[in-house]
Length: 113
View 1 (tube, rainbow, N blue to C red):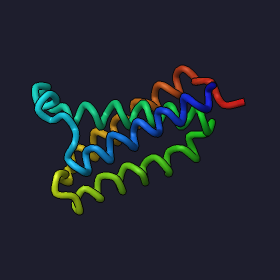
View 2: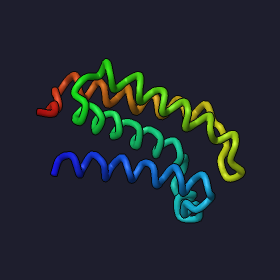
View 3: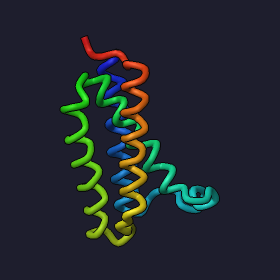
View 4: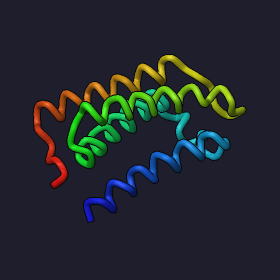
């Protein structure tokens, strides 16, 4: 059951990225929220960090993978008409990961096992 939850969240992240890349996110609804993209980057990458930590169990392995994913995903936006590269989006993703690390260190989320 736990493994299924991890892969569902990974799938959700992938779905959001693909929908954004092809211009199919409901921007008319999202644009009503000021800076929705910054908020989304913060929470999506923060939660992804916690999910990956719960799945993998070590920040030493999670952080490099997650930060590489964050940079590649943001840089890949250069190649899509419906996306724009943003240093602020990148920073918000990094801040979300940082906030997740603080929570992980403070609460000691359960490790796989």
